[in-house]
Amino acid sequence: MFPAQVWPQPGSQPPYEPGDWDPDSAAVMGAPRPDWGRLAPAEPPAVLAPGLPPGQGYDFGVSAGDLLTDEALVRQQRPAPTEGWRLAVYAASGGRINPGQSPQEAARLELIHRIRRPLPAPHRVAVISVKGGVGKTTVAASLGLVFAELRGDRVVALDANPDAGTLSERLTGPGGTTVRDLYEDMPNLESVAEITRYVRAAGRLHVLGSEQEPAMGEAFSADEYLEVTSLLNRFYNIIITDSGTGMVHSAMEATLRTAHSLVVVGSPTVDGANRASRTLSFLVDEGYRAAAEQAVVVLCGDRHSPDVDRTLIRSHFAARCRAVVDIPPDPHLATGGRINPGLWQSETRDAWYLLAAHVADGFGVPSPSPAGPPAIPPGAG
Image (cartoon, rainbow, N blue to C red; front, top):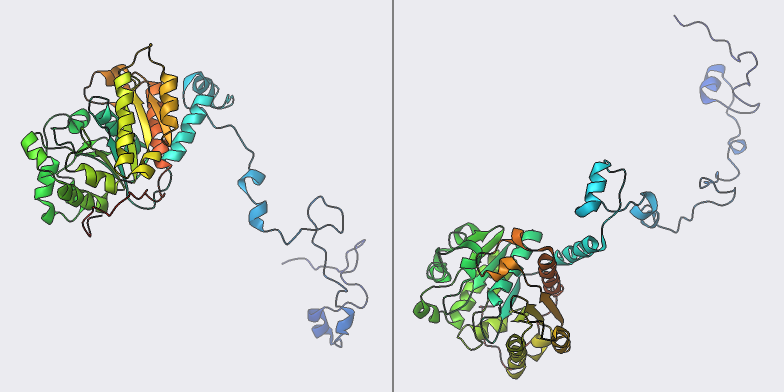
């Protein structure tokens, strides 16, 4: 049993000032109801911000979102390095010593941020050149690999070359189904799972190879190209077309008419630069001036010469298109064999990232409209 309590305790203050009213004790003691006017405070208590002198409170006109932010509440730290001697120091010290990221690493992360730009609708990229032999297939394959590696959506690379293109071989090896097989079975394809029977995988990139019989490849017409890409458009977010050699085969007009972005390929040599320049001129002559001005020119460095003025070549294309990307010489790509991104040199990887970032900058931007009446059959877009 608890000991009896004596109230008030010796030396303590009484619980109520004279005139205060306690409803419980009043009910017990039969005290009359007090005058409520005596109990009402004269004004509400002030709400003071910590550390402010009396009379200076919060500005309730400022939203909490403006005050309670990461920048205001969280102590900012340097991003941890992920490569080189900076990573070694960071790991050896258990994270206590953080030298931060190198300028190269910070720039690469900024490119990755651009590559991962939100994509509001499926995007078609056409990789083109007026002539072959300048690295067009290498560009289409590498661009697809970068997008598939760094983005979470579905990416497919389509070989529209009528002359036994090598896109599939460069990415997955020889053999396998082709776009012709897919086209013949299109009426039976209703899901991405069914489509995957006709594509091959290079990492996360799906690859749809061309027909290796040139006679059959020529039969791949503009209408057939539109039907195939319309099907892919239902299941893939990014479609990259290796348009094949030349600019006048049957599917090229459909490729240009439906592309959201153009990548024009050349090389830092006299003939390679001329081919890329002629491609831009062809686009202008055919009514695709706006598309040419928004194109990205890629100069593949597998063929190069110290006697050629690369700065002059870059400045020539910079005045005619949206961006110019130099791909440095790379021993792995120079073999012309199967492409393995793990064997790219660091400078080569950064160049591919830069190309992908430039293309991603066009995500969500309305496609340049070509001059003249549309050449796309109704419902094929």
